[in-house]
Image (cartoon, rainbow, N blue to C red; front, side, top):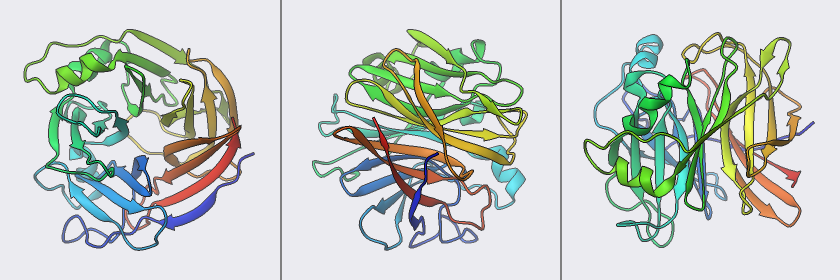
Length: 305
């Protein structure tokens, strides 16, 4: 089993709204650039910015205009459900790369995304660009009865999305697209739909009758992918349920599972970042507390490659 070390709680300097807490609670994806950690939360309209070396509270960058309701049920219904965060290498108009945040696509209002340019130091520069993800997420409703995109990685000129299954639809998959076509379409109004170049469906096993499902992934230098997964006792892609167990695994460049190990505690890990150091992978992970009153946490661990 894998043990995690808690590094910090994701506290923030100022709340996202008047009645919101001074922390991120539902962390769902992360990207690490140098000593800066970018985190999205599935119940916010903002991107969190934290330090991996200093304990001070983080900052928020607004991604979308407007406000979300305070009540949990109504907030859940209207939130953009940002679940995937991925670092994009340099491309047209973004000489130092960008960060792409993506909604899960599990409801029509969850097909929004945001693109944030980076400067030479890896800091966000300029205003976020709001995106309509319908050209890529819309067609996937035909492939998955319960669409729920939870992770994204880039390797070479390929974008890979990670579909999360659930107890009724244990439909985990890695979905592949040409990155250049996706970026061009997302920045063009009225873009034609883009169908994936390949879909690899995977079985991550189960525990106590509850299947493990993808919650995030990160690309490795050789094209392999390290991923996190949880066994959440829920019947669909909308409702939350208790987290029975969690684990970390590796899939090869062709989408085949190489390894999968359980965590020693059922942390609901929903974001992962990996850095290879020889024959080890140094990992950072963030959790979703499923409780607005509890802060999400940043953890670290190291596993063999």
